[in-house]
Length: 289
Image 1 (cartoon, one colour):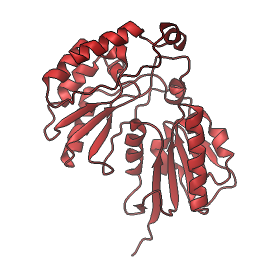
Image 2 (image 1 turned 180 degrees about the vertical axis):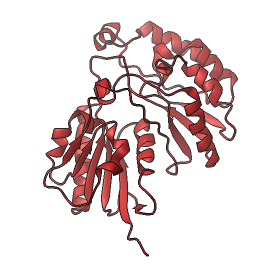
Image 3 (image 1 turned 120 degrees about the vertical axis):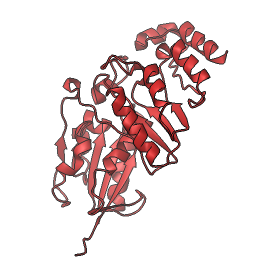
Image 4 (image 1 turned 45 degrees about the horizontal axis):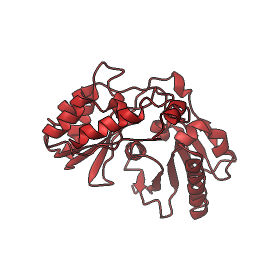
């Protein structure tokens, strides 16, 4: 019996974490029923994983949604992720959108697609993310020569301008052995480099009593992975111990992406950032030693 596979395409906007999660979502579509195709080609289903850090990000999401609706008017359009969590009604008002899934629901997307018939009005499924402690493990495979490995989700910082806690909830992470197993699975696929990602990776361990440096000490023991790259880390969470480990362990690439929103302590205070100009400068001096 020949099964006519449906073509499914994925498009990701935003951060490395979104890329890891999109890859995980794509693997939830059974290969015996679905064929993955590039987002630039015509498909039966488009899954658009969105970002909502700024108004500009929201605009890019709307443009992407409309682009795929125009590319394949009869396709089933599913919009998921941060923008979908924060502004589901805004997305559902776009003609041609069939399904809107929030931050947690996107990982169960196959449960929400009973048919590929176009809908008169988009279905919306999302929970109150601020009350959930769900953690959905994610890592990317097949898209690049390296893998993005999610180790942490959410943030407790509550910076004055940031929507991340509303879109993803509070800081949380799995136990270290869970992440080690995922790294071992990545290594088994022949991938040599892992990019460690999350919303606030330096905050790893807050929900389990561990630490980011403790996690790294275990990750570097994974056979087959030759390089670990640390993605963005807050300056107040860049500890002396973490810097020393990066210097002494050849598997951890000597690179830090340290965000700086302003050089003014007054502005940083108004933003409710957890560092000052002097603290940031001291971290740079320490790294450059």
